[in-house]
Length: 475
Image (cartoon, rainbow, N blue to C red; front, side):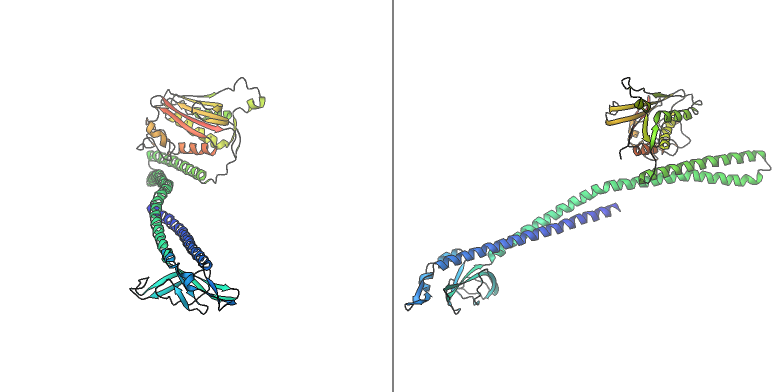
């Protein structure tokens, strides 16, 4: 599918470029051709002016008002000169009779008084004495005809001819050069279009692959609890008839229903997580933002999570970094840890991070949550902030995460150990809980609040998640 799309894009790039090049080449050809014709016409008109000035005009029979052209005196020195320039001269009487010509054979073309220039076609048979040895092929000439007058008396017509190959020969060469250039350019654009279309399709291909992977993972995650629910329901229904006869069967029936309840809850949570991520991706989420005191929010989340730590004997603490002593503004001190955000989403964010830290910390370990307000340059990430930020660090003393797993840690359904099942929650290298959407949801919430999240981990020492959120959101 993507190769076909890439091929179509490359073809479109090439076709559009070829059309543009053809239009450009046509314009260049027409401009050059018209320039050549204009130059020939200027040359012919210049010859006409020179020859007209050299004409010897004599009175007829001593009549002062009647004149004639002395052909022998006017044209005796012009033959050699015009042959060198590929220009032929013809002199006609006032009645159109050819009186003198540099051509060995007359052209038999009627007189047309056109000083602007015209192109004529002459068909001549092969002749040994002919200046133009052409066998039954048309001869094209560019001609300018000038009527010579004295007062109102027409003395005759001067016609100057120039071979048309002075236009066709460079025009053909130009067409060949343009065709060669266009061909090379089209091939280059075709190769470039194939390369660029591949580059353009890479994000689409990557998104498509991620969508396929997401769909496959979601199907797997949904299939497992549904299958277990069906199995337990079938067993419960099979034992329902014996429930009254055997007390043990009644207890087993109750346990199976509890399993169904837990699986249903897990399935509902998975669907809610998928729906949340889908809304964030599509941008249709209409969450309301308001002032959120982060110190109170973290106290609430830590208080809820402390109810879960006695079993594992994990020390969970919250540390609020006090404002500097130089800060004396009462209003600022009162709102030192307050930012604009969505309370429910932020509670979900830090609940996920703290629950992860508790879940994967060994018995007797320690989980520390730290809240600080930072400005200027962050010494941890090296980022420069133009406004105040709140930074929350969630640190644990677990075994850490391999460096190779860090780049994909926030991918949906990703687990550090892909073979891990939901029953092996104590796997040493595992970091994602439940369906593997916890950290993906955390990242989506942070990005929704225009912040960023990063993780630092050292195997054998522990892991630290760092969340940085702006005090105010940009519109």
